[in-house]
Length: 245
Ligand SMILES: NC(=O)C1=CN([C@@H]2O[C@H](COP(=O)(O)OP(=O)(O)OC[C@H]3O[C@@H](n4cnc5c(N)ncnc54)[C@H](OP(=O)(O)O)[C@@H]3O)[C@@H](O)[C@H]2O)[C@H](O)CC1
Ligand SMILES: [K+]
Image 1: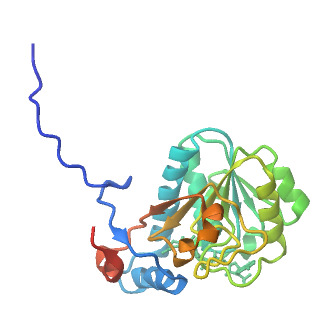
Image 2: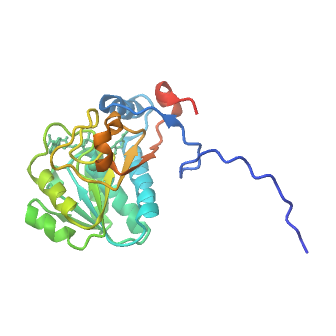
Image 3: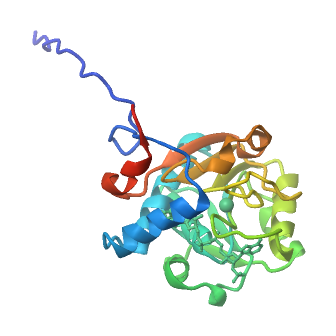
């Protein structure tokens, strides 16, 4: 009988799901993470679409690991945080999940990478709904088992406007599992200050690194567990913030 040779198990480095040792990176400010994004695009030539695809695909994997069943409803805003939501939808659909995208703005108002991914989602005949009133949002969330917050990310400034506040209020009232993408909508990335209607997440999936606003005690109940998803930004670009492992 063939007895498989016993080999020493290689020492497993702490790996994230992408199979490379998960570097420990300092928490970044809004300005730092947005400049990393910009440098990756302008100095390294990585297209924003590639960063968004890595972000959305990585987030979809983490969602599948943490909320593996039920209907996923993704609330999308106007910018690239919303753009991530269309990528997440496409990858969850590929995992044969029931997925609905609910855009709180007219799709025509999107631009750049977000508009590109919204168009792909529509051409792929994913379930994409536009809901620009509280009643319409309510009607699309009633059967959600998981709600994903792709309303606002690092581009948020000032108090939540109109429909965004409505969307967060409605989402917070449901029994669904709530997952925030990059930062819970309503939370200030730097100060951690939370709008009265901040998305209450059980899990926050954030890109590149944790944000400095996540360090405050008051924000823990809004963040839930935190997972950092790398999006392909070169290690050299992150070097100033890598912590000794
Ligand atoms: N390297 C990375 O981290 C990557 C991050 N990605 C994702 O991109 C977002 C940042 O995207 P951005 O488009 O810059 O900003 P947002 O999507 O957060 O905001 C979009 C627009 O929302 C409006 N806005 C701003 N503040 C408010 C508010 N308080 N209430 C309502 N609406 C608001 C504003 O538009 P206006 O024209 O209405 O002023 C914003 O422009 C990041 O968080 C990640 O999720 C990339 O996908 C990949 C790389
Ligand atoms: K968000």
